[in-house]
Amino acid sequence: MGEIRSAREIAMEKIERLGEASEEERLEWRYVPEGSKLAAMYMDEKGSLISALGKYEEKVKKYVLRGLNEVLVRNISLPENEVDKKKNKRAMEGLKAIKKDQIALENIYSKIRRIFEHYQNIGNEQKQQAYIELKNEFEHRVRQALQQQLGSLGGMKVDVEKQPQFHSEWRRRQAQLDSEYFRLLNELKKELLAIT
Image (cartoon, rainbow, N blue to C red; front, side, top):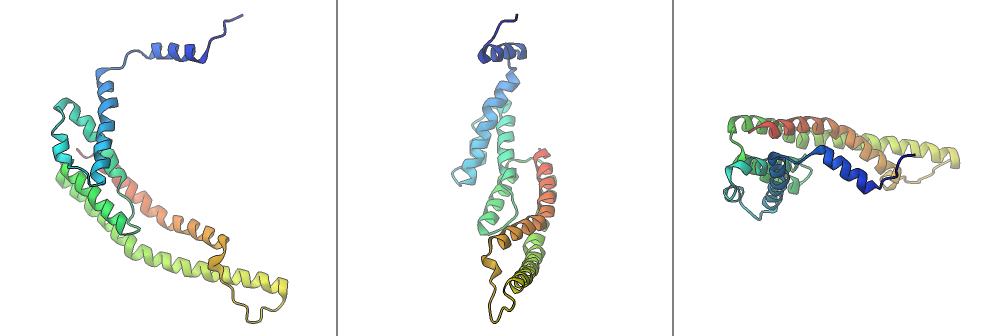
């Protein structure tokens, strides 16, 4: 019969099979998180990216930049409110400061701006219309259900906006309306990550 080994022994055996981490992997593990931390500080308006990057040697700068890049791109989102708009602007300014290919960057930014503009104008109109349609639909269903149960409604007013089912359905429809915007924005964010 085989010998019983502890989970630690099995894990150590697997680590030995993996071998020693390369210099490249060690640099990546150390400096990508530092870049992420710098980006977070920058987004909180607690630092300058250019002066922070100047502190790193050339051989590690690419890892710091990767961490910066990932966090800044992740901070770009659909502009639901003024805070989102400010955050988007800050992240996009940060990317502009660290990217070399400014022409490709500006091309993607113009596409992102169009998505934001469409989202704020036409997207909001679509949401308002969808909200009114859903509200009318719910009122009709509730009235029908009440009429079947009570017979006559008299002057009874129905406020469906206080119903949890209404809010649940509205969130579902809102997500459905936003899904195309998210898809387009995520494609552009992938392109942003690829720009040097």
